[in-house]
Length: 551
Image (tube, rainbow, N blue to C red; front, side):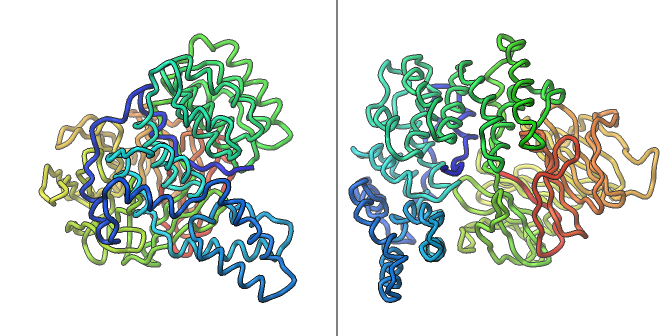
C-alpha cells in the first residue's frame, strides 16, 4: 500500500481549469540554485532531474542491488549498500519498498540507505528546480516531472510542487486529456496513477473527468482517494459514494484523510454524524454517511470541499527550551529536526523554508532546511509569525502586532494598552485578527485597528490564564486556559459549544476532520482528540511545548 503523499490544498483551492494565478517571483529560487552552482536554463534543470530519477528500465537494473543487501557475504552486502547510497535520490523509491521486505537484513540496510539519502538531500533545492523549470517550460518538462514524481519521499514537498506544476502545464479544458497524463492512468507506479486522477479529475471538461473514472476502482486505495479528491474539485458527485466506502476500507492510519473530506462536505451536519472510533463500527458509520448522502446529495455544494485547507498530517513543533524545531508525521516519526535559538513560534512555508520567531535574538528569520538564514527582521520577544499570501510577514508580541514587507518596511502596526497582554493570536481567512489576552479578553480586529467585537471571558470566574486562540470557519472561537486545563469552543457571546479537559493545556488547533490537536505544557505531550474527547494520536515532546501546528 502506498502511503499518502501529497498536499491537496493547492489542488483543491483553485477553481477547475485555472492555472494558479500570476507568474511566480523566481528570484529567491534562482538565488538558491546559484548557491548550489546549478544553472537556471531549462535544459540544465531537465538534466538535473533526470540524473536523480529512473526510467522503468533503469529501475529494473537497480533491483538486483536490493536483493544483494541480504547476500550471504558480508562484503557483498556492504558493497550493495554503498552502491545504492551512491545512486541517492534515484534509488529512494526502491528503498522505500525494501524497508518492508520480510528479510530483516534487507529491510535494515534499506533503512540505513534512506537515512543517508535524507541527510544529503535538500528539499529547497529540488522544489526550486521544479518551480524554475515550470516557468521556463522547455520541451519535455511534463514528461520529466512525471518521471521524477515517484522519486520524492512520501508526503514530500517535491511531489506537491510537481502536482502544482502539472496543473499549470497541461490543458484541462480540451476534449482530450494530456497524452502523458492519459498514459499515466495505467502506469504501474501508483503515484503516477494518483497524479493523473488528481489533475485530470479536476478538469472542467467532462470528457477528461470521465477518463479517470476507472481509477475509482483502482486496487490501490490511495489512488482511489486521490482520484476522488480531483473529481470533487471538478464537482463530480459520483465520487462521493466511493469516498464514503473508504470509511470501511481505508487503513486506520490514513482514515483521517477520508473523514477530513467528509467533514468538509457535510459542514455543520457532520457534528450529528458518527466518526469511526474502532474497526468494529466501520460498516455502521459508513451506512449512516450513505444515508446522509442519499438525503442530501442534491443539496450539498461540492465547492465547499475546495474552500478548506487540506493537511499533510505533519506536525511542526517549535521547542523554545530545547532550542529546536521538529516536524513529525502521523506515526510519530521525526522527519527532521533543526537547531534554532529559542524558537517560540514557527511556520512551514510553501517553498520548504521555515519561518521562526526567535526569543533570545529578538527577531523573525526565514531559514532553509539546513538552518541557514535567508531573511530576517527584528521583532522583540516574538510570539507569533506568519508569512502572508502577498509575501509580507505578520508578527506579534505581548503588546504589539506589525506587518512588514520582504524589505522589512513596516506596512501597519497595532498596539494594545498595558492591561491587554496578547497571550494568543490567530489570523482568519478574511484577514481579521483574533487576539486573546492573558486575563481573558477575546477581541477580533480588522487591521490596522478596527475592533469587530470584544468579550471578557473572565467576567464570571477569575484566576484563569488564557493562552491560546483559533478563529474557526463556523464563526466561533477555540480558546485555551492553561490554569484550568480547558479547551472551549465558544461564540461571540461566550456560549460554550464544546469542551475538552486536559491538564496544563496551552494551545489547541481544530483540524479539518473535526478533531482537535491539544498540547500540554507540563505533561510535555501533544494529543489529537475526536469530538467525544477520545485520543486518536499522541506525541511526547522533549521539553514543554507552547505552540505547534498541523499541516
